[in-house]
Image: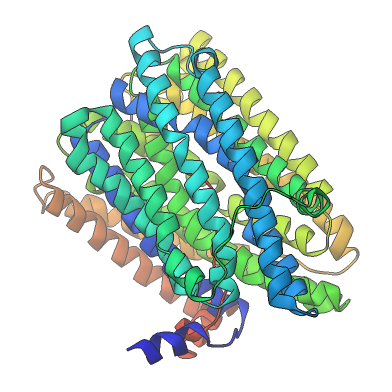
Length: 561
């Protein structure tokens, strides 16, 4: 058994499509457990003031993790470690470097966490202006407890560099699963005993498990970092200088999300919970499709650009982009058509009402409009990173994040002062009689910001890399769009046909209705792709035949708490 695992972890990298499928498989397992986590929260806690406090409590620790811990990310540290290992007395130099980064990280992270914990009573009034004083008091304590989570997960990503350096990809990929297991433990076993504090303790337990699962591997290779007092700050500055643009870009996204949560706190109780549930659901295909293909392409892009092989660089970018479009469009249509069935099966139980289901489903349909563009942005940003250009993605990301906030403000104003506009949207999304629909402004603003982000980075990318090359996504887009429309129409017609055949008061029959309708849609869509002789479809078949699970890949680190 051990030999099989070792063999699995040491297989060579073949191509972007095969590697992306393997990464997508790991992402699917992690996202699946994340959906179980959300269902458990919806079932036991329910969308309301308590869950609003819980989700709002993540915002400051999440921002701290992104703005500080991501400075020592795997993508930044790995080149430093490899360079030192390849030099004279390499392993000693690599260990000293890791000790240096670890010590600086602990000093900064712990110090800033203490300062934020002290200032928390002043911060929460800006984060959640619409909360009651009782909710704010709960949020202060809960956020303070959760400040431990970015410390542990940051440490996990730090030693994860060693885990991946020695090709223990499976262990690193399992870390997010243990994180969700810890959260589930808090929901199931601690919430009924100590309330919302049990949920926050579960988060800390999950973050600790995220870290501890990798410790045996690091100790085995004698690379576990040690705290040192004589820190080489020049070396730390080199790491920060390289990672700062990426960190600032991620921080802007986090700040935009904080503003959206702040706006949601002034709306109907439960708005934060429903918005977060919808965001988590739309993040599943983004993680499986967009992140997988962008991460899989990154090593090849770096190598191609360093060798000045621009034809291969552009070819790999466009291959991955076509695959993202190929997968995303059908997923968008199926999520929109089957949104109520998906949300009800995943979240609709006990404390999660039918009104909550409908409003969350409507939010999901608005989020996923930008699904393809979110994935493409991730890819083009990594293209810039591979070329050593981090300033342009930063500028575009900052601009788009600001516009998300502006769009949200404008849409809330329009929906509040011109109810006829909101009424039209309610009719389209079938939530006419559901209270609290003004919160739909938030996912709509997020989608608009994502579309703007893609539009800007695509213009820049074409200018900087594609020049006058006759390269286009139109053929893949048209073929995938035709297949997607076929899938959507077939699924929609099937839903109507099966509506009277199932008792839709039970979760099992709702699942069966959605599953059968979706299956019919997918089968007919696949047939359309076959008739069109779609290249991406046949590339997928080729990757499956090549046993993509045998690839060696660099697994992505955790992007947020």
